Length: 307
Image (cartoon, rainbow, N blue to C red; front, side, top):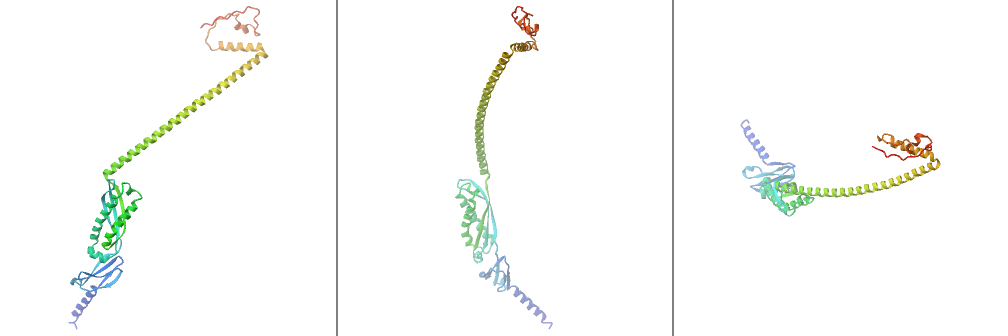
């Protein structure tokens, strides 16, 4: 009995190895290609536990696992020329999925790296064609979405030939090259300076119109004010003369006295003037008599004032 234990152990190990090499597991992120002597036998796309012939090392069934999820690769710093001759630097990326594992195995031996290399070349060419058909401003406008759809449309036939399906193409960055950036900046600067000069010219023109209108209004207002002041002055003079005339007609002696007192104030107060007059002058008649009578004396003419 003891001599049979090694044999039983060897048989058990062989059975375990046989079972282990006969099964394979496919998870939800994978799909499997079963190869027999290098030829595709079947493709398993659903997750689960599957069986195959053992002894893959002897040329029997072998399994190649293929991604069953959306993958992405990027294309960076692509220099493309637009129809006007200027250049952009473009970054783009592609999302795809391996829909036909059998075709994918036959064309690129199931290599994602090799498939992306082929797609990268075709994406580069598609970007150059799409940008080359459009002007300088198209990539920076709402037309950019249409450009991405057009690139995806051009890329899909090549992807299908590799067993892949293009899910989306996105232009991540579109920048001007250094020389074009400087040219664009200079052009925009010149446009802004010209616009600023136009605005300043319009402002100066508007200022001149406003100033001319204000000057005209000032002249009109001053002329109107002077006219009204002359009218009021004339009315005031007339009213004053009327009041004087009325006062004179009522009491001529008092009016003469008032006029004489006003003359004394104007001639003698704070004038610094020296006057040489005769005491019998008509100018001093109210100094001689409060009633203004001259006492029968002969009136004499005033002597001219001396400085």
